[in-house]
Amino acid sequence: MLTPDRLFRLITEMVFLLLGALIAWIGLAGRLYFDRRSMAWIAVSVALILWGLRALAKPGQWGSRWETWTRGLSLLLVGALMAAVVKVPFLWVGRLMALAGAVLIVRGFLGALLAVRPR
View 1 (cartoon, rainbow, N blue to C red):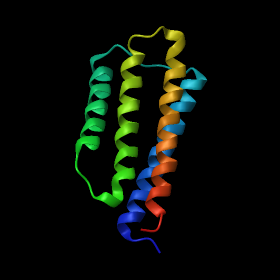
View 2 (view 1 turned 180 degrees about the vertical axis):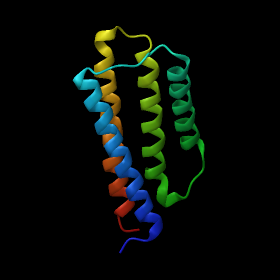
View 3 (view 1 turned 90 degrees about the vertical axis):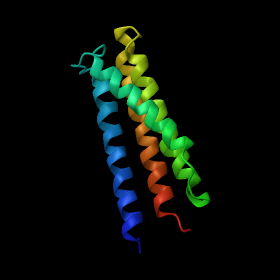
View 4 (view 1 turned 90 degrees about the horizontal axis):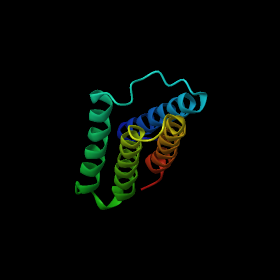
């Protein structure tokens, strides 16, 4: 049986999985109705990069180091992909969004597996 803490982590990772699926679907469908050069887009991408670096630099428990690496690297990669969207040609924006969604999907699967594994 899952403890409330582990169940909350599992639900959180499922939210990331669904968010990744939504972002990948939007990127592949080509429904890109946002200003990729706005200050809000750049601020969110920088915030994700900093959040990922903070997660990687933060000392954690030895048993949860894989969870920390999964979270930190995924946020760092998604932030970098969002920052790259600003500079690439418009034809690549959908592919980069789909790739960011795929990163979040992988993070959701790995995080869910790490949340339910026996300790």
